[in-house]
Image (cartoon, rainbow, N blue to C red; front, top):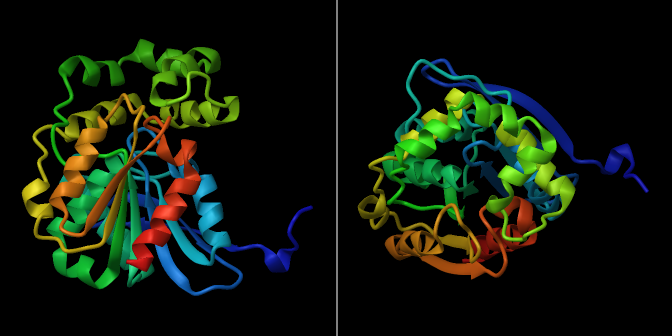
Length: 282
């Protein structure tokens, strides 16, 4: 059975313009009832808002207002005048939080979305204190992300991009991002569509952006409740790098999820929702 119109959450799509001219596509989902804290979802490189579909649905059903947005150059968001960089992406998150005027929200960042979240809470401290009550960080790191030239070039390679656009080939190429040897076909296809839909030069620029990043010292001075999750089968970002994030944050806990790979929001949405509840209960 489908829900009646009266019982469906209110969904609003808007655009947030940043100070350097990027236009960020934002989805705002409000529950029919409930007054739980708002949750902001920040996706990783080569993804987009649909990566959060199951997570967002469960959060809204639990009474949360949910904000998700496409990072610049991804999905329906445009690039701005400034080059892609970790500090710039943290400022973009700040722009979204300011535009929707949230206070006391939980920010959930996956992979490179975690880089953006950590950059925001360390570089925009006063704003973060007012707007963010906690963090959930998934399959992410605060350092040791000096992507080699070979991988950056592959991300921007035209033949690689051509292959990604062929569904069976593309799904096979991205299979290592999952923990399961045979991920569910709809899940694998959703992942392929997002990755293939990201411009190859944008992919390369993002993979290059984390070189030299080390946020650990700054994180040690951020007393914010956090849960850091890693899949024990993650081949993209080692789980010990997530453990280092939790060790740096004064009020963080860390745990691994058995059998989960890098695509945590697609593979273990229930664990993400539970972590949000854990942060709120802190």
